[in-house]
Image (tube, rainbow, N blue to C red; front, side):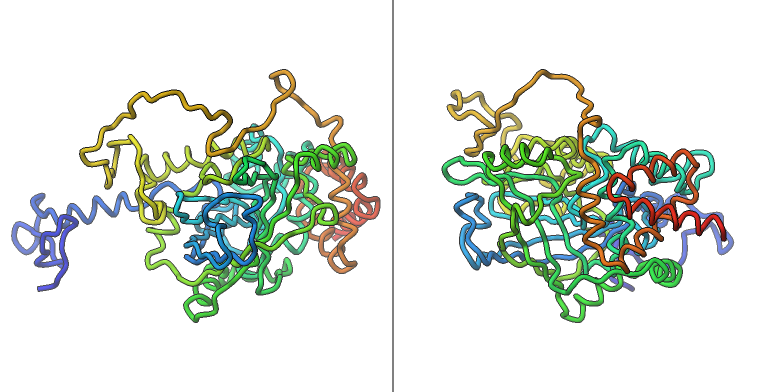
Length: 482
């Protein structure tokens, strides 16, 4: 007799033969072990993520190497040498769960810190920017990256139709179609918080911050042809590389660094450049705001069970701890709602009780019941008694909030925004070899767009840099002549 049991712990005598009426059947409904196996099998897939469906993850540790307590009172930065347990999920963005790891796509870089004050989730990408600056466009954009509702095929034409009508996307499009759009696995790429966030110190002073994770393995990217080859021969290339490296004790590491900006510096910089410091399609130039080292992130343990940790992981940028804060970034504000809402649908109302999502500190709230309520508060009350007025204003935890100005409404700033300078700056930073790869990668995709989309997009490239526009136009012409 095996030591197999049902989910209720009842010993299973025979896992090879159904209970039947005689040797030839029929099968009897009383065979609960059979019924339980079939029922669970039918339900063992949770809905895949709408974005970032294909992913890999690992556990690790963050170690403070430099004192930033003058900027933040967050306990995890309280002393040099302090260590905090982490979990990091990498992913592609647009593809389904069975898609190739090497597709041309941004890569998700979703990092959780299990601090003594609760979970801090820094949910970013391997790019410092994004295609959009306002979350109201996000569902439409993602639909262009998915499948056409009639053909059920991916369509470069609808991608370029959207991008060509949204010039704010140009900076991220330039990154995407450069060599950085096909990183060589997850270990050899940088990560970014991407958005502007806040640091709050013990005096309640705010400093705007951008988070950077610089790979200590060195940057490595795949050529377009190599990425396509691996998509066919080893579609799980990045998953295999990450798991194998950690399993062999070759632990990947990143230098954690920050850019800092006071509000006074923000006002002066915005007046000088005309750029919005909270615009996700822009970077803060490092010549203006250099990076400062904070610590080292190391991944040193593979999950024992992929589904338990990686598939059920539910991170949200809304999860911050005292000493950290948000910003008026419109895309960030939309994500503060969207990520937790997606987890409620995908994993369930008690997803925070699962091991990978559970804080490593005590939890006290009045949330009760719902599906899979493993920790349901015991005999503690499920309400919070009315208390005396709290004297502190702002956002709480010493965060005084930020001043609001203007009239509530919908504002379209496309006519005055500069969508081209930073994309042009990036193009001019590239070597001649990288420029050639960029324009060829773009042309190989843009050739499938209609003429109107091509013309609009070429206009954007020309405004970024005349050589950029000419290069793409020449590459497009070469494709047309083939």
